[in-house]
Length: 166
Image 1 (cartoon, rainbow, N blue to C red):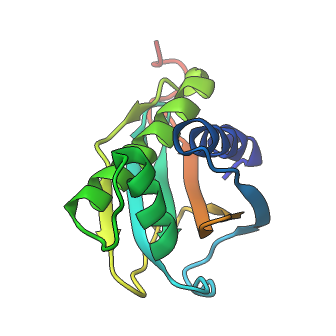
Image 2: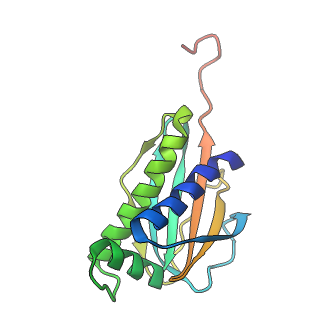
């Protein structure tokens, strides 16, 4: 994955947390994620997943610790949430959609389309990328706890010979 693809997602996540949630995030470690990457500590219990397609394809994963997911949902719903339920799942899906959508606008040269978000819950869950994609993982810290952003995005290789492409 090309490193310049990650910056719009970092900016989008930082902006979404600041404007939507009134929560500042601090970027920590940035690394290439492999399928045998270490697990997050504490475990991230809620992950929003969105697919991207266009002249580049890939996946964005917003992985939140339990407390971050609960606090984000509480702010978005203007009501205290104390368990991972349908409201938290909807809030994390919406937050993931906002992050991916804003980054998409900054990557307009790829004419990206964003899929509907899926949300995975449970301690120790794992989101794996295809074997030919090495995502970049960016860890963040918030006053509520840790979260991570994983982006695996690669340009689509045209299968038509150059003479046939229009």
